[in-house]
Amino acid sequence: MTYVRPKFRHPELPKNKLGYSVDYYEGALSTLCAGCGHDSISAAIVQSCFDLNIEPHRLAKLSGIGCSSKTPAYFLSNSHGFNSVHGRMPSVATGANLANRDLIYLGVSGDGDSASIGMGQFVHVVRRNLNMVYIVMNNGCYGLTKGQDSATADMGSKNKSGKTNLFESIDLASLAIELGAGFVAQSFSGDKSQMIPLIKAAMNHPGFAFINVISPCVTFNNNVGSTKSYDYVRQHIEATSTIDFVPEMAEITTKYEEGSTATVKMHDGSSMVLSKLEENWDPTNRHSAINAMQSAKERGEILTGMLFVDGDSQDLHHVIQTSDTPLNILTERDLCPGSIALEDINASLR
Amino acid sequence: MIDVQRSGPSTGMPTRTQQSDVLEAAYASHGDTKHILLFPSTPRECFEMTADAFDLAEQIQTPVIMLTDLDLGMNDHLSEPFVWDDNRKYKRGKVLNAEELDKIKRFGRYLDVDGDGIPYRTIPGTHPTKGSFFTRGTSRDEYAAYTEDSGAYQKNMDRLMVKWETSKSLVPKPFSYPTNKGNACGILFFGTSTYSSEEAMDMLKEENVFVDAMRIRAFPFNQDVNAFIDSHETIFVIEQNRDAQMRSLLMIELQASPQKLIPILNYDGMPITANQIFKEIKQHLTNTK
Ligand SMILES: Cc1ncc(C[n+]2csc(CCOP(=O)(O)OP(=O)(O)O)c2C)c(N)n1
Ligand code: SF4
Ligand SMILES: [Mg+2]
Image (cartoon, rainbow over the protein chains, first blue to last red):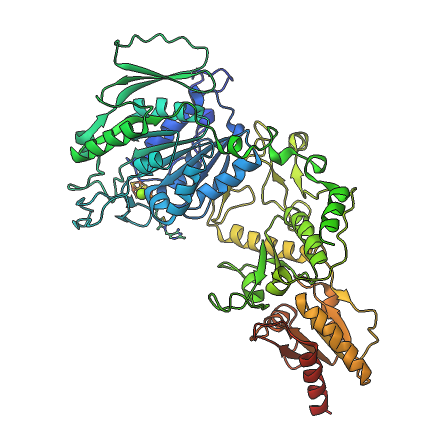
């Protein structure tokens, strides 16, 4: 079911540069369980797009199947959406992006959607460096089908029926770093102040930007013994840094403690200022990021924040040298080599 | 999509030819589903139908599957030169631009405005406030909103059927042989069974046996296929699979009588021969005399 959100809004809601108030970026009323982490992530997406002054019709939202993949119905109702088949969002995003490089692509998926049925698609979209933001709403279970363990459930974690997961978990963020992703972050649905700057920075990253958000399933995986419950995550979370996203032209006004900050320039002139909390970690170094994550895992901590960023990342279009004009507006004149070229082909076969 | 058919099931004889994906391709996917199929028989037709397939896919807003086979895809063939009309325009189908959207009160992605079952579509990013919609695999109403309303669901399924009817006049027509003279027997074939079927007709002619012939080039079947079956007492359906898949498709879709459709089948992995066709037709005609 999709419910229509009541239209009434406070008339003096602040407007962004485009003259839209935040409600213009909302979607239909969510039908997820009250308290589901996914709804907080949707709210962070709405806020980020509002702050970034994004024209909703210039953004395409895509997803697979799952409670997480239902969320595109609950944000950005003025954007084009595509709810694809289970685990197949990356293919649809790749096709759409190749056809029109000028839109912003926001992919939303779940841990089941990405780490099980869609794993083959996930790894390839990472290594192709498709210019998109890919958010996994990670609850360690298949929420929509009533809470079976997913491949990201930690070994030893208990599910609602008290069963312990016997298998090693897949860490999507580490995997993304290893596969060459240029932007990898991790966050928690309960930490909106961290999520919003991460989403904004991801949208400004010129290539594949991955955010793994731990997002508790209150109905099936919020029990004692689960490592994806609100309580457990709150107790074991450790941030790499505090993050500020500074848009292009804006002045950096916050005062940062000397020596502890790293400024990462984004391609459009905006920058991300990270006040590092985690020692011995360099967000621009893959080894360092992986090490930090591995040692956090050994300590039983969940590392959140910016994990790795490559400021020189080049997206798929750059690599395969497609035309600057989106392919979907090229015409016969640009695309069809015509009868003369065909005659050459005929001749070569004679 | 291009399916270069080879023998199955599973990996089958991976280096051998067959025409055995007909039914799978026609009804691929769950639910009430039918797909548009094209059956080229020569390299030149592969070239032309591939271009046509893009036009059809956009006009009808649906995947188009071209069923060629290993014989055509991997063996050497003598071919007429390929030709291209430089004035040809891509057919993009019913796509609304920003001005057209401005003139519409409310855009409905699945609204059958023209009564042909093919609604209008938009390309993402066209208009700031109009034309965006949410594509989903689930049931939806005419405005692309999720619904489990039975009426809305059935209406959409019926619209898809109207679209199917419309596509019958858009897909390539069957090829009717100029020698057709109202004989009692006809032969129906498609794809690479063509060469041998034509040769078999010549062999039969030498023995004063005359048959009419039609080459099927697309599914859904054009009205002409129906008429061809109706106007003959016996139809030999020539194909390269065990289960007479094209014959089944004709029975299912055109309610053609099974008694009337005599299968001539080859499924040894090699292309069907004129000799086999010739012998089986003669045999049948002798037996029924
Ligand atoms: C091809 C296919 N296989 C299985 C299913 C059943 N199914 C629906 S949702 C789901 C798991 C979703 O898990 P996840 O991506 O983690 O999303 P969550 O609901 O936890 O947010 C499964 C297996 C399906 N819809 N399609
Ligand atoms: S089942 Fe779990 S994941 Fe799904 S909506 Fe409810 S709380 Fe969220
Ligand atoms: Mg999940």
